[in-house]
Length: 284
Picture 1 (cartoon, rainbow, N blue to C red):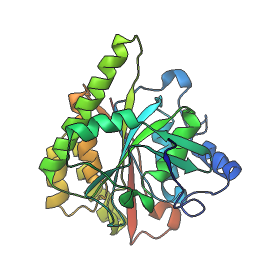
Picture 2 (cartoon, rainbow, N blue to C red):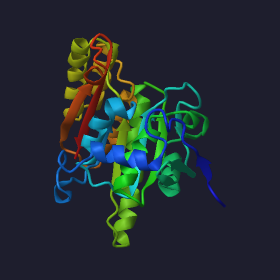
Picture 3 (cartoon, helix red, strand yellow):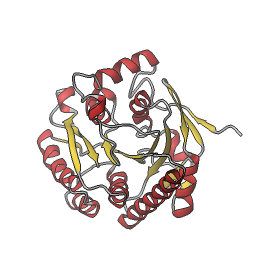
């Protein structure tokens, strides 16, 4: 049976809709002059990458992805910007289309996760118009032609639910990797938390707020991130996905995190009164 096709929702708006132009832009953000040699790339467990229009956040996203060895299997977690669909929504057997081609679903890993965490539901409505996973795909595709993904939209801020999903994700990944090892295969999984940082305050306020959130991520402190976002009114849209990623990554052996690049939209727009922050972080 052929899997369903998820067509692009923001091609031509958030990023170029033509393959040649898109490739050119991706290469600009990941050019050899700005990035380490292939041998110096890291096989990370997780990362945080922004999801705005490439003109604003492409430089930060490119800085993250160009420092990573991109495995064939990635779990991509993002916030729910549209308000549609279930609070925790995955599409387990849907192929994603971008101007660069198609990205397969990792239906097996998704099924393992669905069995472990019943609050996660199969639901296409949350994904149909959501941009925050889609904008990550061209960066991943250009480095990993055999890419397959588990795409998850998160529309809850409940810490216990987020932690539970992270624990289930770590369990599903560990279980799959154990089977791979028995078959003499070394299959890594990268967990991507798609998130922008603070929204629509001044550049100075945004940088101060974002510094507090980034400190918690660098400390691998999922609970601390939740608390600082809530207590300091930090409008980091993907803090939920980041909490899930941090929870899973620590259980999978992560011991450190590195801030690769930080920027705000003011650096591009020239408007420093109302900006969005972007952080690129690698978790190993």
